[in-house]
Image (tube, rainbow over all chains, first blue to last red; front, side):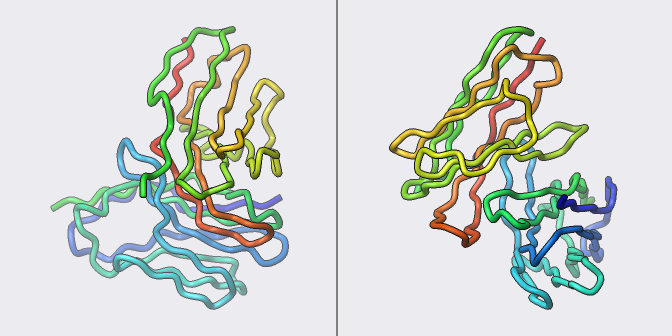
Length: 112
Length: 115
């Protein structure tokens, strides 16, 4: 079945540092790929998405490129802020477009 | 536009009891999905409803059930609660027709604690 593997956290960075959170996936067909963010005490918010190979999703300074050859969708940000502290989830939709399969999540803490 | 609302936000039950959680989707959204979030298993898909019909179901026991009403509001029910059912239950809605993925908007969740 479909699965998503993302790097274990927690990740602790200083403000303005470069961020990379790795995500790889296994799926049949051509999944759509997503990054969601969860702030403390809140639900999930879609951060960015890519629906086909070589697409780059971007939002709020975050970027991720759909790499079919390496089955990856790594999240990057050039300069993190304290306000980026949250849990980040990589996810995909596979054969059924109604179901999201999530990675385990990566806790990011950014210190001033 | 109001977001997805879930009630109650917090719930404490004892083993063997049953519980009903409610989700009101964003106005105009006809699809509602439910997810269970636990520290050990992460986020797992429970089921999805569209126009009062369950279209997709995750790998959960029959104690977990749901339904959707004509106004798209949805409820999920867990019977004979077990300690392992303690989790954050998230509801998500989307404006989906058929076949095309539409962004899922998540509610804040209901935190269920089973004692």
